[in-house]
Length: 112
Length: 112
Image (cartoon, rainbow over all chains, first blue to last red; front, side, top):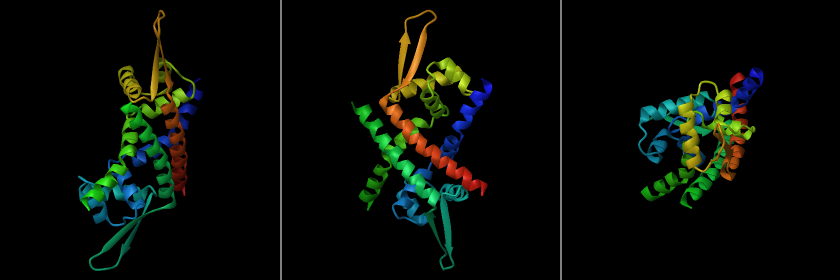
């Protein structure tokens, strides 16, 4: 019985990792913005109200380490940095669209 | 410009609501367990390590209010309570499967 329960716990493991990796407060808005064509941290700052630069940079760094984003630094003056979605990041966008549709159901249900 | 930014913020709104409604620490494991055929709070307690009854009840209540779960009380001795997924809850399971698959990609990517 205990082994079966452990197996069931293991089953939610990839999902837990998925949820943990996007549960940073601004991570989903960042993914969304990049998906809409924005690339530079200054653009993310304009698009996301209330996030400060230090927090933004930390979240970008974590998402780069998780393999969701790629960072490209251009050797220019002033220095320019651009982020883009990796293949894994693009798959995340697909999963988020489904969750977005589900959110709409939730909103409609609350209105009734 | 400001209107456009607001429109973009609105676009992530259903997604934010979706994420908020499942971000309670045990909500996803609860949905998972019900999806696997468990119904009673005592079964959830056995299946989820480290959750206490008070917290479990709070999360069940919130999910019932959000329209994800239905609660059924049986007039028996001892009293029996069973939870099941609503149609919205079942749609959530579909979205979570996609996110689970994405979590697997994330894990494989980290191993490389």
